[in-house]
Length: 404
Figure 1 (tube, one colour):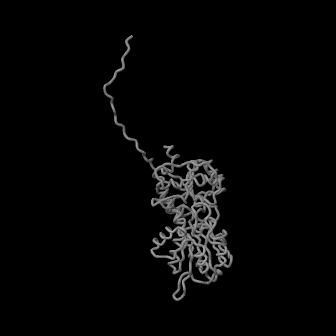
Figure 2 (tube, helix red, strand yellow):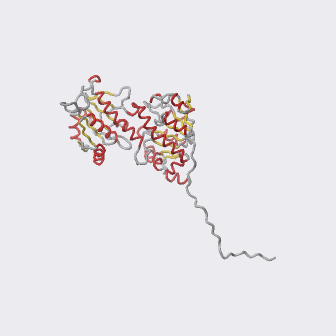
Figure 3 (cartoon, one colour):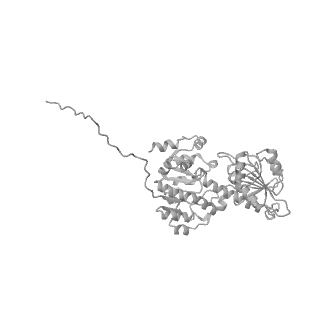
């Protein structure tokens, strides 16, 4: 039997193949749920009726829990007219594949969480509890935090807006408590011809400090600014466009300025953990009776030694003759403005998420969104949280690369 010899061709045929690129997925339809916040003193809502209207007109489904907008003076009717579905059960609202909250997940929310849900909310590192993170990991949740969400300019837009609101509110609050009717010194915050201007000491040259300084100057007050970061002090002066009285945090200089001021603002904070305490009790005891301390860093423990947590209902107490205002979450007191600021960031983000084909896709294409992810399909991708609670850390970049 003759064996057939293999045919050897003298030339190979090469055929060019089309190059396969990373093709973006077609737009995804989002189903968004907005629950009513039950966290302590949280009045904000993360999407306004106008923003909901834009999302609905773009083909997305938005469900809002009954009375969720009440704290910000947005009614169910306004949401309904914008195209949202109103639901009356907390269990029902948590069935939405994407949840958008203006407060962190609290223990009461845990039984309602769905498998593979996406949650966009603040994270509040200082108040974080390990059982909440563990439960979210168990449910394979993808979570994006407000605090770490960046925009194209590399800044944190929601944090900036909330800090601007807090800084803007400080002078209004200080002016109110300096009045005789609130047992203050009875001085007008600002300057009147022929009368020495009110003296304001600001500790911390971040965004809160900058807005507070800007407003104090606009009222005509005399401002003394402290921060250990000389670059920040220089940057703040450049932003305001004038030379200011500035100093590094030198205890003797700080004590001398506090002794003669009417208003002292604490706006120092660390990125993680507790705020540094830079004003001692003896410094506070030496301040003028009837002057006021506003400690914005109270949600991180406060930077005045005499600071104790207060609420919007009972915002002040007197210690050493000095009025202390130590309310955390000041923006919640100006909830409508704060809700609009959050909504202005989240509504365009949701449209972008949809255009990219969903959260999994946008995390691959958008580095700024990637910054905000602290849980991805149940894997903890925030190194600080993993260290704090001794939980397994996974690098998000490796995680999403392995899924391509």
